Image 1: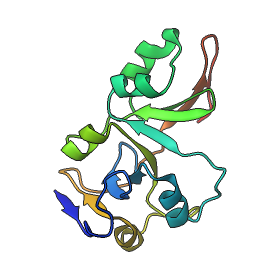
Image 2: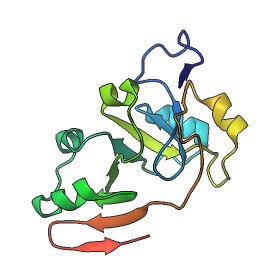
Image 3: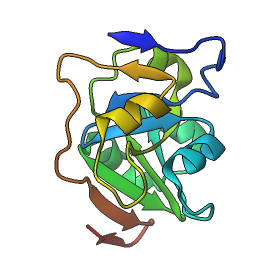
Image 4: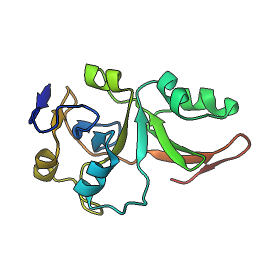
Length: 156
């Protein structure tokens, strides 16, 4: 179910903040970093994860070492860091046309920095709420792997 709260206030999807279930947690998704920073109360220099909805979209935006492409394509619940850029290919149910058309979003947990998920806070801050058959829930964080052509290190 896609529920738009304020189309007049944020008519362009690139500017909107979306509340949706990701593969590990309830998240805010947006292409507007400034809005995410303001909502979360987060330090400006702290980078955001970039969620892609296909490997094709990922390779248009980030140069992936050839030796890592198969691994990244098959990975589930895994965030990669390549050349100081954190990303993942979405494995959560992203069947919404909204996600497919956009191709990617910055992603962060739907809470204030350092706090637990609060549905009322998240609902108030989101412009669009996407709830599918699995609902909204938190689970274990994703694996975090930093890699380049030769080395790979698991950070979490």
